[in-house]
Image (cartoon, rainbow, N blue to C red; front, side, top):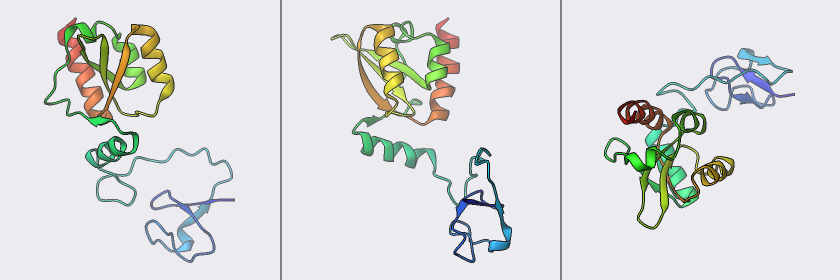
Length: 150
């Protein structure tokens, strides 16, 4: 059975005398049979924390999609009209641009989410061009852009 570290909530190999993530002594490890305990989001400066910009850069390289800075690029009204705000929030994506050739550019936090891509493709009827952005930037952009779009 896995064990969890009290300090960093990382899974610990009990053969070691210390947590391999944060270095806490084995006495600070607790047995968790359920494994359903949610792991808290690590705070900046703690082990396991990955800054949003680094994560976006990694996802961009991993999936071969462009990064997009939503503070520098605005969404067109015709793109926003294709995806309801509730769906954008649920799927953590935002439409950015509807191209002349009919392709819809979206920014999403998880470019590997095939179900979300399929849903957007069916909903809009357009070919989808994916870019990646930080989830916080997406939720912030959804709030501000759909508010001004209404």
